[in-house]
Length: 265
Image (cartoon, rainbow, N blue to C red):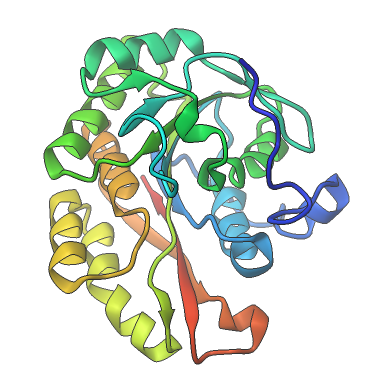
């Protein structure tokens, strides 16, 4: 089953020329094991996400974990096969890798309903298609942020990558925004302990501090999964590439959504 574009022209541009404005081909790149990228409309968060993709060496497989905003479909939903359309052309789902994940993680199921109108993965795809035109993808929609679920899924991803000999030619992308609808200074203060846990490669600590402090970060589960996978693949460090908020684009800093771009290597 193919996934058609649902948010092109509203959440992100439809032409290569417009997409190019959000990336930088002049910065040095490095091999990364994972990354955290925002998923708001590109007018607000696109430059932050573009900075992350611009700094990572392209790979052949992108595992993309996004939050399930709608609540539809399975709590751990694997888009099993087919293609996802983008304005730059389609990206093919790695069906063989999808089978490996389903075998290794009993919590995951093959499901398309969770992905049908979800934007958090779709907005990542033009960047991936631009930098890796023939790459394959594995979209995972996550609605279950239980720490054990995140750990099991992350370890299953890492184990599957090793089993398929893809650990050196893959990236695990977590799609997440940070605090929502706070004054800019309050959002930054709220985000600080969560970012500290991410930068310290502490997925359990991240989920704990987000819950304890009631941080309105919509992708803490996907980030925790990504961290578990990256750590299992040998990650040793994290870099904050960019931290910003919607006020930088709108000019309104009284009520912002904040965004962070992070690479894990």
